[in-house]
Picture 1 (cartoon, one colour):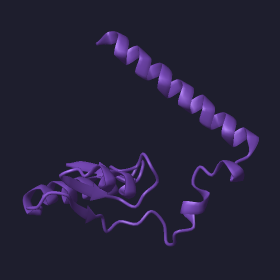
Picture 2 (spheres, rainbow, N blue to C red):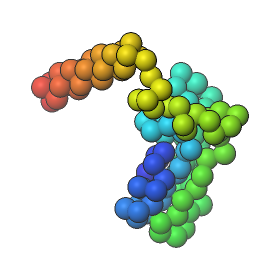
Picture 3 (cartoon, rainbow, N blue to C red):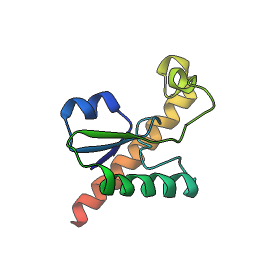
Length: 107
């Protein structure tokens, strides 16, 4: 089973079971820093393992990211970010990449 946000891509690949959250990419396990959202996502994904009997089954989460879909136009839209916001994102990415590199060297 796959938990994900990129429905078009995951369904195109044809995974056996797919729990889809209509959230920004990278947030398939629930809303960040929201234990209730994450627990609900896990609970429903595990329930899917019990109930999905056919291959290529997609179950859509009932959770919503925001009250309306406007976030889809704004979320990490490079044209709407300031130079400082872009720089912060670059710094965060570099820190994550460096941390992953250190973990790889430990293994």
